[in-house]
Image 1 (spheres, one colour):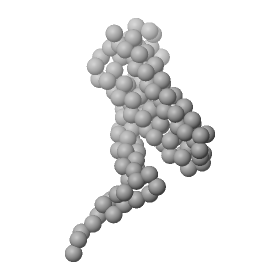
Image 2 (cartoon, rainbow, N blue to C red; image 1 turned 30 degrees about the vertical axis):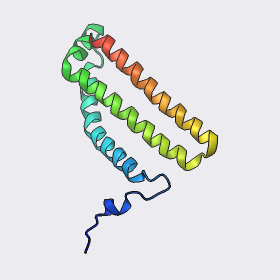
Image 3 (cartoon, one colour; image 1 turned 90 degrees about the vertical axis):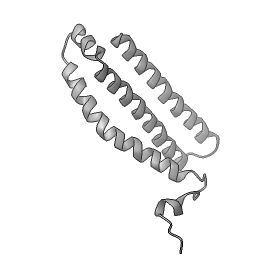
Image 4 (cartoon, helix red, strand yellow; image 1 turned 180 degrees about the vertical axis):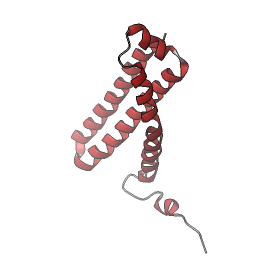
Length: 123
C-alpha cells in the first residue's frame, strides 16, 4: 500500500503542471506578510509625524531598514504572483502575456524604487 499525501497527489496536475508550487509559494509569502506587515506598521507608525532627522534616525537602524526592505520585497513578489494568477484566469493569448509582463515589470520597478529610497534614507 502506497501512502500519498494530498500534496503528492496534486503534484504535476493542472495545465501548467506548476499549480501546487505556485499555491505553496503564495501561501508562504502570505504567512510571511502576516508577520511582516504588522511589525512594519508599528515601526512606520513610530516614525510617522517625526521631522526628517527623526525619520532618518529611525530608518538608519538595522532592524527597521531590513524589515522595511524585506516587507517591500515580499509584498511585491506576492503582488506579482497573485496578479499573474488573476490575469491567467481572465485574459488569454497575447493580451494575457502582455499583462503578465507589465505586472511583473511593475513589481520589479516598484521594488527597485522602494529599495533605492530606503538606501538613500538609511545611508
